[in-house]
Image (cartoon, rainbow, N blue to C red; front, side):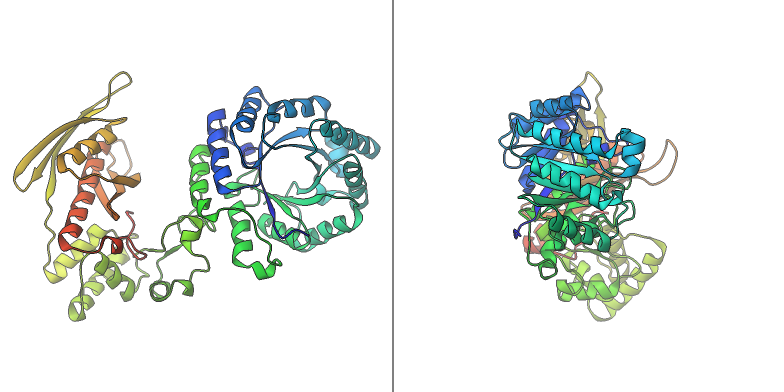
Length: 520
């Protein structure tokens, strides 16, 4: 068996079949280009016969994306296969993936075909696809509920007619790892020929990744999966989890690996989430917001002393940046002192004890604690104050469908009034551009979020952002009933923090190390 597992990504086909997801051609192409950067081996770009839009999207991917094999899905009908080939013909490497159900419940109730008819249909479909390309994949739909002997007959027919990949789909997420592994191994023993055996698992019982990894141990050398695990019903096996399980525990899988560039995993996850509208759950393995975040004091102390005490993966390896220390009621003294140090405060002895006691009181009343909270706490306990160079005096803006968004910002800089007018793609960008011009501070916005503090049309907008200048990344936060004003206040707040660190002469590399607070 080969020592590399082929990653067959079906985010753009099975993933897009998730309820509520409908990607246009441009969005599918953007995701496909990221999948190529990620290093997937095969991109299943869509189901060309399904609609004209899907056909055009698959064709655009086939013509533009180079590196991965571009695959189209088709039923066994000749017109499906012809349409599929028409869509993928211009790919550097093209694959036709054809399928037909082999379970009794599907043959009887959906196909209205006899087992003999299914066998004939499978053979003829593969033979027809081979007229176009020598890379043909065949799947017996609902394999986990199919009669094993009959399914193997169909698989043998597919191989005899030229199929080079046999994909075994757990279409309804029915399989359990032990039985799934036995089934994959038995197929390898029973079906003769030169082919790659593949596993495609759904997550109806929450076992898609476990079943996929079991299949690898049983000899599968292709795994079909999606970014973030999206897909029909409960979804598909999550690519990032499979890849990192193989990478983190190679001794459990005979040392097999993938060609995935893991540092692109987090970026791929964010892109798919943004374009599909499917949020990634906070505690999602590998790519979730909390995957490398620590609030418990015991965990924080361990991570600050040695990251591997509580992290089995390096967040940088998956493109997630640094470990995050989140201060809350479960946090300990070590994390509290370390966070203050990175903010420019070195507290020791009684001062630290008093500040930590007040921190615990505040943490019991507030779920998340920001750097503003900590600054106020330190000022109260040790008499320190932060001198802000810039204060927002006013911001006014206008825009609309036919008007260029424009903002005028007035800042107070040590008693001097600075007024600047700027344009932008939106009123928030125009306001931030005006502030940059007024302060002369250039950098990039790395995070931006808006939340509603209260309900109703007069709700307060709470804007949190991060601004990076010359390696210094600092959070900013602003509160207002107006989103643009809240954004401007948050931006000025971040710039003042950058200025404070510059004045203190702190090494910019130390500002955003593991343990720094995020702009929550």
